[in-house]
View 1 (spheres, rainbow, N blue to C red):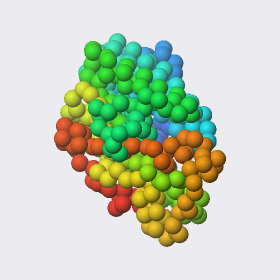
View 2: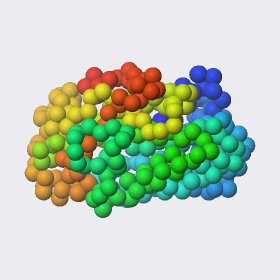
View 3: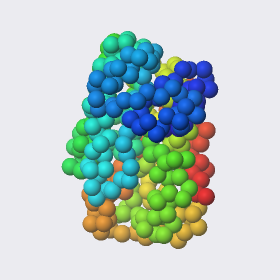
View 4: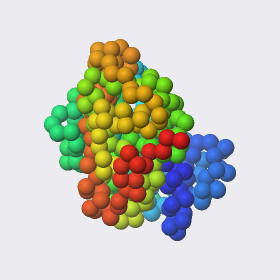
Length: 299
């Protein structure tokens, strides 16, 4: 996200300070148009010093540490990000309060977190999953903490962006990525009825929506997804076809659960999608890639 967001903000005339733990990132961030601040998001003293030095009008919280997601060990895959969404959020809010930031915009998740009951597409008024499976519970609890903390900060304008599943450059669904290669090689089957509904978003569209939220968003929650939520049984065969691969195999849910864990089975069969109507209406934003069907590049 940083690679997409920083140049857009700098190009719009904003003075951008980018926080990173790594000195090695300084040159890259400078090229993108940001002044680099070195700080560990889990160290409150370092975060407060960085924010006090920058004195920003807006804090944009995009902290994650998501690498390869192993659905058999979903909780392990998100453990570091969960800490950032709890401790990192609290640290940034505490620092922001000290300098009186006018707006606090935070990354949340609208791709994997809604309650798995009711209709296939959820709005911002619908709850996060109140009874997640054990492997996904820590992630949803961390997101719940982040959202409650940001929206409850009455000293600033708190905005939460529930992004859909990213695709595009630098994401897990970029051309040549391991995920697309699994689909190409028929190692990504449709599990059960494949009724889990996914909402996607091109990373560039997510960045554009974030700029809109920074510049004119009202406090609250916004789903940042494309116009085309689709069940796995629809999008996975379509993507395989575009990759020039054979149709994905179909396996019973119990087989999928053995291979991909309970979390993998949930993602394939029970997930709910998200509506972007509020973001389009209130942020004045429209995704340039309204559907994964045309936006997702496979080569």
